[in-house]
Image (tube, rainbow over all chains, first blue to last red; front, side, top):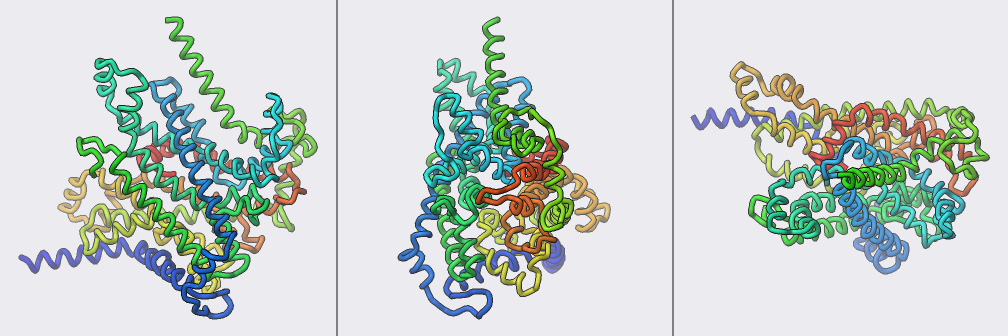
Length: 305
Length: 278
Protein backbone atom coordinates (compact mmCIF):
# COMPACT_ATOMS: atom_id res chain seq x y z
CA UNK A 1 0.00 0.00 0.00
CA UNK A 2 2.67 2.43 1.05
CA UNK A 3 4.83 1.44 -1.89
CA UNK A 4 1.92 1.99 -4.26
CA UNK A 5 1.32 5.43 -2.87
CA UNK A 6 4.99 6.21 -3.13
CA UNK A 7 4.98 5.11 -6.77
CA UNK A 8 1.98 7.28 -7.57
CA UNK A 9 3.61 10.26 -5.89
CA UNK A 10 6.76 9.60 -7.89
CA UNK A 11 4.89 9.56 -11.16
CA UNK A 12 3.00 12.65 -10.07
CA UNK A 13 6.35 14.21 -9.29
CA UNK A 14 7.63 13.46 -12.75
CA UNK A 15 4.58 14.87 -14.52
CA UNK A 16 4.56 17.91 -12.30
CA UNK A 17 8.20 18.70 -12.94
CA UNK A 18 7.61 18.23 -16.65
CA UNK A 19 4.93 20.89 -16.49
CA UNK A 20 7.16 23.08 -14.40
CA UNK A 21 10.24 22.57 -16.57
CA UNK A 22 10.16 25.80 -18.63
CA UNK A 23 9.62 27.89 -15.52
CA UNK A 24 12.36 26.05 -13.61
CA UNK A 25 14.85 26.54 -16.44
CA UNK A 26 13.89 30.20 -16.54
CA UNK A 27 14.09 30.58 -12.79
CA UNK A 28 17.58 29.10 -12.60
CA UNK A 29 18.91 30.50 -15.87
CA UNK A 30 17.31 33.94 -15.95
CA UNK A 31 16.74 34.82 -12.30
CA UNK A 32 18.72 32.89 -9.71
CA UNK A 33 21.90 32.36 -11.73
CA UNK A 34 22.11 35.95 -13.01
CA UNK A 35 21.30 37.30 -9.54
CA UNK A 36 24.23 35.42 -8.04
CA UNK A 37 26.28 36.44 -11.07
CA UNK A 38 25.60 40.11 -10.50
CA UNK A 39 26.37 39.71 -6.81
CA UNK A 40 29.76 38.32 -7.80
CA UNK A 41 30.32 40.97 -10.47
CA UNK A 42 29.48 43.68 -7.95
CA UNK A 43 32.65 42.67 -6.13
CA UNK A 44 34.81 43.03 -9.24
CA UNK A 45 35.86 45.42 -11.95
CA UNK A 46 34.50 44.18 -15.27
CA UNK A 47 34.15 45.81 -18.68
CA UNK A 48 32.89 42.90 -20.82
CA UNK A 49 36.24 42.60 -22.68
CA UNK A 50 38.73 41.61 -19.97
CA UNK A 51 38.06 39.00 -17.30
CA UNK A 52 36.67 40.38 -14.02
CA UNK A 53 39.21 41.69 -11.51
CA UNK A 54 38.42 41.05 -7.81
CA UNK A 55 37.85 44.26 -5.86
CA UNK A 56 36.12 43.09 -2.72
CA UNK A 57 33.79 45.75 -1.42
CA UNK A 58 35.54 48.59 -3.25
CA UNK A 59 32.60 49.27 -5.59
CA UNK A 60 30.25 49.65 -2.64
CA UNK A 61 32.76 51.78 -0.78
CA UNK A 62 33.11 54.22 -3.66
CA UNK A 63 29.34 54.31 -4.22
CA UNK A 64 28.82 55.44 -0.65
CA UNK A 65 31.82 57.67 -0.15
CA UNK A 66 32.69 59.35 -3.43
CA UNK A 67 29.79 59.23 -5.81
CA UNK A 68 27.61 62.35 -5.72
CA UNK A 69 25.74 61.13 -8.82
CA UNK A 70 24.59 58.09 -6.87
CA UNK A 71 23.38 60.21 -3.96
CA UNK A 72 21.67 62.57 -6.36
CA UNK A 73 19.96 59.84 -8.36
CA UNK A 74 18.82 58.10 -5.19
CA UNK A 75 17.28 61.22 -3.71
CA UNK A 76 15.67 62.08 -7.06
CA UNK A 77 14.14 58.61 -7.26
CA UNK A 78 12.99 58.77 -3.63
CA UNK A 79 11.33 62.11 -4.25
CA UNK A 80 9.63 60.73 -7.32
CA UNK A 81 8.35 57.64 -5.49
CA UNK A 82 7.28 59.51 -2.34
CA UNK A 83 5.38 62.17 -4.25
CA UNK A 84 3.95 60.29 -7.21
CA UNK A 85 2.76 57.11 -5.49
CA UNK A 86 0.58 58.75 -2.79
CA UNK A 87 -0.74 61.32 -5.26
CA UNK A 88 -1.67 58.69 -7.80
CA UNK A 89 -3.38 56.49 -5.23
CA UNK A 90 -5.24 59.44 -3.69
CA UNK A 91 -6.48 60.51 -7.10
CA UNK A 92 -7.49 56.98 -7.93
CA UNK A 93 -9.45 56.69 -4.69
CA UNK A 94 -11.17 60.05 -5.11
CA UNK A 95 -12.33 59.33 -8.64
CA UNK A 96 -13.34 55.78 -7.71
CA UNK A 97 -15.52 57.16 -4.89
CA UNK A 98 -17.10 59.68 -7.26
CA UNK A 99 -17.87 56.96 -9.78
CA UNK A 100 -19.00 54.36 -7.28
CA UNK A 101 -22.44 55.52 -6.24
CA UNK A 102 -24.37 53.53 -8.86
CA UNK A 103 -23.67 56.16 -11.46
CA UNK A 104 -25.02 55.75 -14.98
CA UNK A 105 -22.53 55.11 -17.82
CA UNK A 106 -19.96 53.88 -15.31
CA UNK A 107 -18.47 51.56 -17.94
CA UNK A 108 -17.81 54.46 -20.28
CA UNK A 109 -16.19 56.63 -17.60
CA UNK A 110 -14.10 53.74 -16.40
CA UNK A 111 -12.82 53.23 -19.93
CA UNK A 112 -12.02 56.91 -20.43
CA UNK A 113 -10.12 57.17 -17.16
CA UNK A 114 -8.26 53.97 -17.84
CA UNK A 115 -6.88 55.06 -21.22
CA UNK A 116 -3.97 57.08 -19.73
CA UNK A 117 -2.77 54.00 -17.83
CA UNK A 118 -2.96 52.04 -21.01
CA UNK A 119 -0.90 54.43 -23.10
CA UNK A 120 1.22 56.19 -20.49
CA UNK A 121 4.20 53.84 -20.55
CA UNK A 122 4.95 54.38 -24.21
CA UNK A 123 7.66 56.52 -25.73
CA UNK A 124 4.93 58.27 -27.70
CA UNK A 125 3.21 59.71 -24.63
CA UNK A 126 6.53 60.73 -23.08
CA UNK A 127 7.20 62.71 -26.26
CA UNK A 128 3.76 64.31 -26.02
CA UNK A 129 4.54 65.26 -22.42
CA UNK A 130 7.79 66.84 -23.41
CA UNK A 131 5.99 68.82 -26.03
CA UNK A 132 2.99 70.07 -24.05
CA UNK A 133 5.12 71.05 -21.05
CA UNK A 134 7.69 72.81 -23.20
CA UNK A 135 8.33 76.50 -22.53
CA UNK A 136 5.71 77.70 -25.04
CA UNK A 137 3.71 74.47 -25.01
CA UNK A 138 0.10 73.77 -24.22
CA UNK A 139 0.39 73.84 -20.43
CA UNK A 140 1.96 77.26 -20.26
CA UNK A 141 -0.51 78.61 -22.82
CA UNK A 142 -3.33 77.30 -20.62
CA UNK A 143 -1.72 78.89 -17.55
CA UNK A 144 -1.44 82.16 -19.47
CA UNK A 145 -5.25 82.34 -19.76
CA UNK A 146 -5.31 82.62 -16.00
CA UNK A 147 -2.56 85.20 -16.09
CA UNK A 148 0.09 82.83 -14.75
CA UNK A 149 3.43 82.78 -16.42
CA UNK A 150 4.56 79.16 -16.31
CA UNK A 151 8.23 78.27 -15.95
CA UNK A 152 10.32 76.35 -18.47
CA UNK A 153 9.09 72.95 -17.27
CA UNK A 154 11.51 70.93 -19.39
CA UNK A 155 14.60 73.07 -19.62
CA UNK A 156 14.83 74.06 -15.96
CA UNK A 157 16.27 71.41 -13.60
CA UNK A 158 13.95 72.52 -10.76
CA UNK A 159 10.76 71.83 -12.67
CA UNK A 160 11.36 68.83 -14.88
CA UNK A 161 10.69 66.33 -12.09
CA UNK A 162 7.22 67.76 -11.56
CA UNK A 163 6.55 67.20 -15.26
CA UNK A 164 7.47 63.55 -14.87
CA UNK A 165 5.38 63.25 -11.70
CA UNK A 166 2.30 64.61 -13.48
CA UNK A 167 2.79 61.94 -16.14
CA UNK A 168 2.76 59.31 -13.41
CA UNK A 169 -0.26 60.75 -11.60
CA UNK A 170 -2.11 61.04 -14.92
CA UNK A 171 -2.02 57.24 -15.07
CA UNK A 172 -4.18 56.75 -11.98
CA UNK A 173 -6.75 54.76 -13.96
CA UNK A 174 -5.49 51.26 -13.27
CA UNK A 175 -5.42 51.84 -9.50
CA UNK A 176 -8.89 53.37 -9.80
CA UNK A 177 -10.24 50.24 -11.48
CA UNK A 178 -8.88 48.14 -8.61
CA UNK A 179 -10.43 50.52 -6.06
CA UNK A 180 -13.78 50.34 -7.85
CA UNK A 181 -13.68 46.57 -7.60
CA UNK A 182 -12.78 46.87 -3.92
CA UNK A 183 -15.63 49.30 -3.26
CA UNK A 184 -18.10 46.85 -4.77
CA UNK A 185 -17.07 44.32 -2.10
CA UNK A 186 -18.06 46.58 0.79
CA UNK A 187 -21.38 45.19 2.10
CA UNK A 188 -24.21 47.72 1.77
CA UNK A 189 -25.72 46.77 5.14
CA UNK A 190 -22.70 48.30 6.90
CA UNK A 191 -23.71 51.71 5.54
CA UNK A 192 -27.34 51.10 6.41
CA UNK A 193 -26.43 50.22 9.97
CA UNK A 194 -24.20 53.29 10.19
CA UNK A 195 -27.00 55.49 8.89
CA UNK A 196 -29.39 54.11 11.48
CA UNK A 197 -26.81 54.90 14.13
CA UNK A 198 -26.66 58.44 12.78
CA UNK A 199 -23.18 58.44 11.27
CA UNK A 200 -22.61 61.16 8.66
CA UNK A 201 -20.99 60.70 5.26
CA UNK A 202 -17.51 61.70 6.41
CA UNK A 203 -17.69 59.37 9.37
CA UNK A 204 -18.91 56.54 7.15
CA UNK A 205 -15.97 57.11 4.83
CA UNK A 206 -13.38 57.01 7.60
CA UNK A 207 -15.00 54.25 9.64
CA UNK A 208 -16.29 51.93 6.88
CA UNK A 209 -15.05 52.68 3.38
CA UNK A 210 -11.43 53.36 4.16
CA UNK A 211 -10.86 50.39 6.53
CA UNK A 212 -12.61 48.03 4.12
CA UNK A 213 -10.36 49.24 1.32
CA UNK A 214 -7.08 48.89 3.19
CA UNK A 215 -6.22 45.46 1.70
CA UNK A 216 -6.58 46.95 -1.79
CA UNK A 217 -4.61 50.04 -0.80
CA UNK A 218 -1.91 47.81 0.65
CA UNK A 219 -1.61 45.81 -2.55
CA UNK A 220 -1.56 48.95 -4.72
CA UNK A 221 1.02 50.55 -2.47
CA UNK A 222 3.45 47.63 -2.64
CA UNK A 223 3.23 47.24 -6.40
CA UNK A 224 3.41 51.01 -7.01
CA UNK A 225 6.51 51.40 -4.87
CA UNK A 226 8.25 48.53 -6.64
CA UNK A 227 7.32 49.78 -10.09
CA UNK A 228 7.98 53.47 -9.45
CA UNK A 229 11.48 52.70 -8.27
CA UNK A 230 12.23 51.23 -11.66
CA UNK A 231 10.93 54.18 -13.68
CA UNK A 232 12.99 54.66 -16.83
CA UNK A 233 11.23 55.67 -20.04
CA UNK A 234 9.68 59.00 -18.92
CA UNK A 235 12.95 60.32 -17.49
CA UNK A 236 14.91 59.09 -20.47
CA UNK A 237 12.63 60.62 -23.09
CA UNK A 238 11.46 63.79 -21.32
CA UNK A 239 15.01 64.53 -20.20
CA UNK A 240 17.84 64.38 -22.69
CA UNK A 241 18.59 60.69 -22.18
CA UNK A 242 21.78 61.46 -20.27
CA UNK A 243 20.22 62.64 -17.05
CA UNK A 244 20.17 66.32 -17.94
CA UNK A 245 19.42 69.11 -17.37
CA UNK A 246 21.97 69.11 -14.52
CA UNK A 247 21.19 65.51 -13.51
CA UNK A 248 17.56 66.47 -12.87
CA UNK A 249 16.38 63.36 -14.75
CA UNK A 250 19.16 61.05 -13.55
CA UNK A 251 16.85 58.40 -12.12
CA UNK A 252 18.41 55.42 -10.43
CA UNK A 253 17.77 53.06 -13.35
CA UNK A 254 19.19 55.55 -15.83
CA UNK A 255 22.35 55.90 -13.79
CA UNK A 256 22.65 52.12 -13.62
CA UNK A 257 22.09 51.89 -17.37
CA UNK A 258 24.72 54.51 -18.11
CA UNK A 259 27.29 52.93 -15.81
CA UNK A 260 26.72 49.50 -17.31
CA UNK A 261 26.03 50.19 -20.95
CA UNK A 262 27.61 53.57 -21.76
CA UNK A 263 30.75 53.34 -19.62
CA UNK A 264 30.80 49.52 -19.53
CA UNK A 265 31.63 49.57 -15.84
CA UNK A 266 29.58 46.45 -15.28
CA UNK A 267 30.91 45.62 -11.84
CA UNK A 268 29.88 49.02 -10.58
CA UNK A 269 26.49 48.75 -12.28
CA UNK A 270 25.95 45.35 -10.65
CA UNK A 271 26.67 46.88 -7.26
CA UNK A 272 24.09 49.56 -8.04
CA UNK A 273 21.61 46.84 -9.01
CA UNK A 274 22.10 44.96 -5.75
CA UNK A 275 21.71 48.14 -3.73
CA UNK A 276 18.50 48.78 -5.62
CA UNK A 277 17.26 45.32 -4.69
CA UNK A 278 18.09 45.97 -1.04
CA UNK A 279 16.38 49.36 -1.04
CA UNK A 280 13.23 48.04 -2.70
CA UNK A 281 13.14 45.03 -0.36
CA UNK A 282 13.58 47.35 2.61
CA UNK A 283 10.56 49.43 1.65
CA UNK A 284 8.49 46.39 0.79
CA UNK A 285 9.29 44.79 4.12
CA UNK A 286 8.39 48.00 5.96
CA UNK A 287 5.03 48.17 4.23
CA UNK A 288 4.45 44.48 5.00
CA UNK A 289 5.47 44.85 8.66
CA UNK A 290 3.39 47.95 9.30
CA UNK A 291 0.44 46.39 7.48
CA UNK A 292 -0.75 44.60 10.58
CA UNK A 293 -1.42 47.97 12.19
CA UNK A 294 -3.40 49.47 9.36
CA UNK A 295 -4.60 46.79 6.98
CA UNK A 296 -8.00 45.44 7.90
CA UNK A 297 -8.92 41.96 6.73
CA UNK A 298 -12.67 41.37 7.17
CA UNK A 299 -13.69 38.08 8.86
CA UNK A 300 -13.05 39.45 12.36
CA UNK A 301 -9.31 38.85 12.39
CA UNK A 302 -8.17 42.42 12.37
CA UNK A 303 -4.66 42.76 11.07
CA UNK A 304 -4.17 39.01 11.00
CA UNK A 305 -3.93 36.89 7.91
CA UNK B 1 -36.89 65.94 -7.26
CA UNK B 2 -35.73 68.69 -9.59
CA UNK B 3 -32.83 69.42 -7.34
CA UNK B 4 -31.71 65.81 -7.50
CA UNK B 5 -31.78 65.83 -11.31
CA UNK B 6 -29.64 68.94 -11.29
CA UNK B 7 -27.04 67.56 -8.90
CA UNK B 8 -26.92 64.43 -11.06
CA UNK B 9 -26.41 66.48 -14.20
CA UNK B 10 -23.79 68.56 -12.44
CA UNK B 11 -21.92 65.49 -11.34
CA UNK B 12 -21.94 63.99 -14.82
CA UNK B 13 -20.81 67.27 -16.36
CA UNK B 14 -17.94 67.40 -13.91
CA UNK B 15 -16.91 63.82 -14.60
CA UNK B 16 -17.11 64.32 -18.36
CA UNK B 17 -15.15 67.57 -18.21
CA UNK B 18 -12.47 65.93 -16.11
CA UNK B 19 -12.42 62.96 -18.49
CA UNK B 20 -11.87 65.26 -21.44
CA UNK B 21 -9.04 66.95 -19.59
CA UNK B 22 -7.52 63.53 -18.97
CA UNK B 23 -7.80 62.61 -22.62
CA UNK B 24 -6.60 65.99 -23.88
CA UNK B 25 -2.93 64.96 -24.31
CA UNK B 26 -3.99 61.98 -26.42
CA UNK B 27 -6.43 64.05 -28.48
CA UNK B 28 -3.77 66.72 -28.87
CA UNK B 29 -1.35 64.10 -30.20
CA UNK B 30 -3.92 62.87 -32.67
CA UNK B 31 -4.87 66.30 -33.95
CA UNK B 32 -1.31 67.64 -34.06
CA UNK B 33 -0.24 64.71 -36.16
CA UNK B 34 -2.51 66.07 -38.91
CA UNK B 35 -1.33 69.68 -38.63
CA UNK B 36 1.35 71.18 -40.85
CA UNK B 37 4.65 71.45 -39.02
CA UNK B 38 4.46 75.23 -38.80
CA UNK B 39 1.14 75.13 -36.94
CA UNK B 40 1.85 72.42 -34.34
CA UNK B 41 3.03 74.87 -31.72
CA UNK B 42 0.92 77.88 -32.58
CA UNK B 43 -2.46 76.21 -33.20
CA UNK B 44 -3.37 74.55 -29.92
CA UNK B 45 -7.01 73.82 -30.75
CA UNK B 46 -8.13 70.24 -31.02
CA UNK B 47 -9.64 70.69 -34.47
CA UNK B 48 -6.76 71.43 -36.89
CA UNK B 49 -7.23 74.64 -38.90
CA UNK B 50 -5.46 72.97 -41.78
CA UNK B 51 -5.38 69.22 -42.36
CA UNK B 52 -2.47 67.41 -43.94
CA UNK B 53 -1.21 63.86 -44.31
CA UNK B 54 2.37 64.98 -44.96
CA UNK B 55 3.47 64.07 -41.44
CA UNK B 56 2.41 60.49 -41.88
CA UNK B 57 3.99 60.35 -45.32
CA UNK B 58 7.30 61.82 -44.07
CA UNK B 59 7.34 59.83 -40.86
CA UNK B 60 6.60 56.53 -42.52
CA UNK B 61 9.80 56.94 -44.59
CA UNK B 62 11.61 56.26 -41.31
CA UNK B 63 15.36 56.51 -40.87
CA UNK B 64 18.32 55.69 -43.05
CA UNK B 65 16.18 54.10 -45.72
CA UNK B 66 14.37 51.79 -43.31
CA UNK B 67 10.67 52.59 -43.25
CA UNK B 68 8.38 52.46 -40.27
CA UNK B 69 6.73 49.49 -41.94
CA UNK B 70 9.81 47.46 -40.95
CA UNK B 71 9.70 48.76 -37.39
CA UNK B 72 6.03 47.87 -37.08
CA UNK B 73 6.64 44.40 -38.49
CA UNK B 74 9.52 43.89 -36.05
CA UNK B 75 7.49 45.00 -33.04
CA UNK B 76 4.59 42.83 -34.11
CA UNK B 77 6.86 39.83 -34.51
CA UNK B 78 8.38 40.26 -31.05
CA UNK B 79 5.03 40.88 -29.40
CA UNK B 80 3.23 37.95 -31.01
CA UNK B 81 6.01 35.47 -30.23
CA UNK B 82 6.08 36.77 -26.65
CA UNK B 83 2.34 36.33 -26.30
CA UNK B 84 2.51 32.73 -27.52
CA UNK B 85 5.39 31.98 -25.17
CA UNK B 86 3.66 33.39 -22.12
CA UNK B 87 0.41 31.59 -22.85
CA UNK B 88 2.13 28.26 -23.36
CA UNK B 89 4.65 28.19 -20.54
CA UNK B 90 2.87 30.19 -17.83
CA UNK B 91 -0.18 27.97 -18.15
CA UNK B 92 1.98 24.85 -17.85
CA UNK B 93 3.55 26.10 -14.64
CA UNK B 94 0.21 27.34 -13.33
CA UNK B 95 -1.38 23.96 -13.90
CA UNK B 96 1.38 22.25 -11.91
CA UNK B 97 1.07 24.73 -9.04
CA UNK B 98 -2.72 24.68 -8.93
CA UNK B 99 -3.49 21.01 -9.47
CA UNK B 100 -0.51 18.71 -8.96
CA UNK B 101 1.23 17.57 -5.80
CA UNK B 102 4.95 17.29 -5.93
CA UNK B 103 7.98 17.57 -3.75
CA UNK B 104 9.18 21.09 -2.83
CA UNK B 105 5.97 22.56 -4.20
CA UNK B 106 5.68 25.11 -1.40
CA UNK B 107 9.28 26.19 -1.87
CA UNK B 108 8.95 26.67 -5.63
CA UNK B 109 5.65 28.44 -5.22
CA UNK B 110 7.01 30.96 -2.75
CA UNK B 111 10.08 31.52 -4.93
CA UNK B 112 7.74 32.16 -7.84
CA UNK B 113 5.89 34.76 -5.75
CA UNK B 114 9.16 36.45 -4.82
CA UNK B 115 10.23 36.76 -8.46
CA UNK B 116 7.13 38.88 -9.12
CA UNK B 117 8.59 41.56 -6.90
CA UNK B 118 12.23 41.38 -8.02
CA UNK B 119 13.49 44.34 -10.01
CA UNK B 120 14.56 43.42 -13.52
CA UNK B 121 17.89 45.18 -13.08
CA UNK B 122 19.32 42.78 -10.53
CA UNK B 123 19.68 40.05 -13.16
CA UNK B 124 20.13 42.37 -16.12
CA UNK B 125 23.90 42.52 -16.45
CA UNK B 126 24.70 38.78 -16.24
CA UNK B 127 21.83 38.15 -18.64
CA UNK B 128 23.37 40.61 -21.06
CA UNK B 129 26.76 38.93 -20.69
CA UNK B 130 25.25 35.49 -21.39
CA UNK B 131 23.37 36.72 -24.46
CA UNK B 132 26.51 38.46 -25.62
CA UNK B 133 28.52 35.23 -25.30
CA UNK B 134 25.84 33.40 -27.24
CA UNK B 135 26.01 36.03 -30.00
CA UNK B 136 22.37 36.96 -29.46
CA UNK B 137 22.81 40.73 -29.27
CA UNK B 138 20.92 42.34 -32.15
CA UNK B 139 18.58 39.39 -32.35
CA UNK B 140 15.13 39.10 -30.82
CA UNK B 141 16.06 36.07 -28.74
CA UNK B 142 16.89 38.00 -25.54
CA UNK B 143 13.46 39.63 -25.76
CA UNK B 144 11.46 36.51 -26.62
CA UNK B 145 13.24 33.64 -24.86
CA UNK B 146 12.25 34.74 -21.31
CA UNK B 147 8.59 34.56 -22.33
CA UNK B 148 9.09 30.94 -23.41
CA UNK B 149 10.56 30.21 -19.97
CA UNK B 150 7.57 31.60 -18.05
CA UNK B 151 9.69 34.48 -16.79
CA UNK B 152 6.67 36.78 -16.22
CA UNK B 153 5.58 35.00 -13.06
CA UNK B 154 2.78 37.46 -12.60
CA UNK B 155 0.77 35.61 -15.19
CA UNK B 156 1.48 32.28 -13.50
CA UNK B 157 -0.13 33.64 -10.35
CA UNK B 158 -3.06 34.98 -12.34
CA UNK B 159 -3.64 31.57 -13.90
CA UNK B 160 -3.11 29.66 -10.64
CA UNK B 161 -5.88 31.70 -9.07
CA UNK B 162 -8.10 31.12 -12.06
CA UNK B 163 -7.50 27.36 -12.14
CA UNK B 164 -8.23 27.11 -8.41
CA UNK B 165 -11.68 28.44 -9.24
CA UNK B 166 -12.37 25.59 -11.69
CA UNK B 167 -14.29 22.81 -9.88
CA UNK B 168 -12.08 19.84 -9.06
CA UNK B 169 -14.93 17.43 -9.79
CA UNK B 170 -14.27 18.01 -13.48
CA UNK B 171 -10.71 16.71 -13.10
CA UNK B 172 -11.83 13.77 -11.02
CA UNK B 173 -14.48 12.57 -13.43
CA UNK B 174 -12.09 13.00 -16.33
CA UNK B 175 -9.47 10.97 -14.47
CA UNK B 176 -12.00 8.20 -13.89
CA UNK B 177 -12.68 8.27 -17.62
CA UNK B 178 -8.98 7.62 -18.11
CA UNK B 179 -7.57 11.08 -18.80
CA UNK B 180 -3.85 11.49 -18.12
CA UNK B 181 -2.51 14.71 -16.55
CA UNK B 182 -1.48 15.91 -19.98
CA UNK B 183 -4.93 15.32 -21.40
CA UNK B 184 -6.50 16.98 -18.37
CA UNK B 185 -4.43 20.07 -19.04
CA UNK B 186 -5.25 20.22 -22.72
CA UNK B 187 -8.87 19.03 -22.69
CA UNK B 188 -10.27 20.30 -19.41
CA UNK B 189 -8.18 23.12 -18.02
CA UNK B 190 -7.06 24.96 -21.15
CA UNK B 191 -10.55 25.49 -22.59
CA UNK B 192 -11.83 26.77 -19.24
CA UNK B 193 -8.76 28.95 -18.77
CA UNK B 194 -9.46 30.97 -21.91
CA UNK B 195 -10.48 34.21 -20.13
CA UNK B 196 -7.23 34.22 -18.13
CA UNK B 197 -5.29 33.37 -21.28
CA UNK B 198 -6.84 36.33 -23.06
CA UNK B 199 -5.95 38.64 -20.17
CA UNK B 200 -2.39 37.30 -20.28
CA UNK B 201 -2.22 37.70 -24.04
CA UNK B 202 -3.34 41.30 -24.13
CA UNK B 203 -1.14 42.44 -21.28
CA UNK B 204 1.87 40.61 -22.67
CA UNK B 205 1.26 42.17 -26.06
CA UNK B 206 1.02 45.69 -24.67
CA UNK B 207 3.93 45.42 -22.27
CA UNK B 208 6.16 43.93 -24.95
CA UNK B 209 5.07 46.54 -27.47
CA UNK B 210 5.93 49.31 -24.98
CA UNK B 211 9.04 47.72 -23.50
CA UNK B 212 11.54 50.37 -24.43
CA UNK B 213 14.32 49.55 -21.97
CA UNK B 214 15.23 46.01 -23.01
CA UNK B 215 14.70 46.75 -26.68
CA UNK B 216 17.17 49.59 -26.38
CA UNK B 217 19.71 47.39 -24.61
CA UNK B 218 19.59 44.47 -26.98
CA UNK B 219 18.92 46.09 -30.36
CA UNK B 220 21.27 48.57 -31.98
CA UNK B 221 21.08 47.59 -35.65
CA UNK B 222 18.51 49.84 -37.28
CA UNK B 223 17.14 46.99 -39.39
CA UNK B 224 16.10 45.28 -36.15
CA UNK B 225 14.55 48.39 -34.62
CA UNK B 226 11.11 48.31 -33.06
CA UNK B 227 8.49 51.03 -33.21
CA UNK B 228 9.55 52.45 -29.83
CA UNK B 229 13.19 52.62 -30.88
CA UNK B 230 12.20 54.13 -34.22
CA UNK B 231 10.25 56.91 -32.53
CA UNK B 232 13.05 57.58 -30.08
CA UNK B 233 15.51 57.90 -32.97
CA UNK B 234 13.28 60.34 -34.84
CA UNK B 235 13.33 62.46 -31.72
CA UNK B 236 16.28 64.69 -31.13
CA UNK B 237 16.33 65.91 -27.53
CA UNK B 238 18.55 68.84 -28.38
CA UNK B 239 15.78 70.45 -30.36
CA UNK B 240 15.62 70.05 -34.11
CA UNK B 241 13.16 67.21 -34.57
CA UNK B 242 10.65 66.97 -37.40
CA UNK B 243 7.83 67.25 -34.86
CA UNK B 244 5.11 66.56 -37.41
CA UNK B 245 6.60 63.24 -38.47
CA UNK B 246 7.48 62.37 -34.90
CA UNK B 247 3.95 62.97 -33.62
CA UNK B 248 2.43 61.14 -36.59
CA UNK B 249 4.50 58.02 -35.90
CA UNK B 250 3.83 58.35 -32.16
CA UNK B 251 0.10 58.42 -32.80
CA UNK B 252 0.42 55.43 -35.11
CA UNK B 253 2.40 53.50 -32.49
CA UNK B 254 -0.58 53.71 -30.12
CA UNK B 255 -3.05 52.33 -32.65
CA UNK B 256 -2.39 48.61 -32.04
CA UNK B 257 -2.70 49.08 -28.28
CA UNK B 258 -5.91 51.08 -28.54
CA UNK B 259 -7.39 48.56 -30.97
CA UNK B 260 -6.69 45.66 -28.65
CA UNK B 261 -8.01 47.61 -25.69
CA UNK B 262 -11.27 48.52 -27.36
CA UNK B 263 -11.75 45.01 -28.72
CA UNK B 264 -11.07 43.26 -25.41
CA UNK B 265 -12.18 45.94 -22.93
CA UNK B 266 -14.13 43.54 -20.78
CA UNK B 267 -11.17 41.22 -20.25
CA UNK B 268 -8.95 44.16 -19.56
CA UNK B 269 -10.90 45.87 -16.88
CA UNK B 270 -12.05 42.63 -15.25
CA UNK B 271 -8.51 41.29 -15.38
CA UNK B 272 -7.17 44.33 -13.58
CA UNK B 273 -9.99 44.35 -11.08
CA UNK B 274 -9.64 40.72 -10.05
CA UNK B 275 -5.87 40.41 -10.01
CA UNK B 276 -4.53 43.89 -9.57
CA UNK B 277 -2.50 43.89 -12.76
CA UNK B 278 -0.63 47.11 -13.37
